[in-house]
Length: 275
Ligand code: 7PJ
View 1 (cartoon, rainbow, N blue to C red):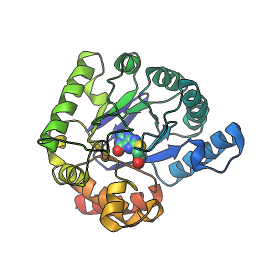
View 2 (cartoon, protein in one colour):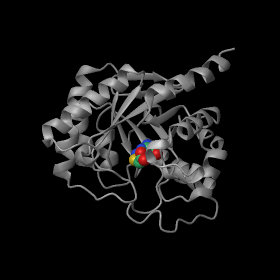
View 3 (cartoon, protein in one colour):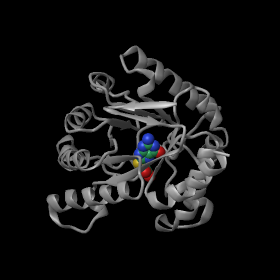
View 4 (cartoon, helix red, strand yellow):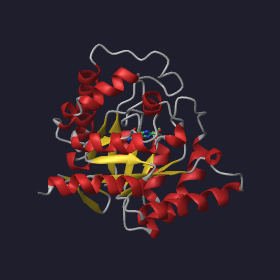
């Protein structure tokens, strides 16, 4: 299965690792805007060195407790980092955004892919991606980030997430985004309680059936914290287990903070699958 994004074609027959590059200042010691960008670029280069297949640059946290940032601030954070990483690495740079203006600017700055937690549902977003040859990840999310974890409800979470993604793939194809440019993602933790998250992981095969490569993001997420009792910085082992399970259930890309450890873990799967 091939995934095309920008000038890159990724072969998804081997599981791929997307490394998370955070540019939000609250995750760094205070050193001004330039320092933040420098640190983010350095981090991205390290993740590429560790074997990341894609780098995902984000400027606005979509975690449940996050404060939204303005368009201007998001552009200021993201664009210099995208420019530098697109020039200095030989792997696709993805941008985690739902704003069409950021998508456009990021693609112009060299981004090969857009990772949208709202699956290109914001006005103008689908058009911004269709206008070029960037790839896209369509993620499922129930509700708005600030309120989505209050009381998420589904009659049948797996069926509803699958139907949503199926319809978004259809809408994207109709809008001019070829199927080989589209990834799908159940959106772990985005309007899902523990039972919803576990059902989606257990039945991930229901999503791979749609024929698009599936991307999974479970790295350090609070569902892993609840299952282990561990804080956000003690979730590496649980994250590796989640990545391995995801790939064995058919995911082709895992979005992670800990690239080196994940690359090692996935090598064991590949070795066994290659027999
Ligand atoms: C995801 C994401 C995810 C995709 C975030 C976090 C929250 N994009 N962006 N899938 N999660 N495609 O990393 O904890 O699961 S932000």
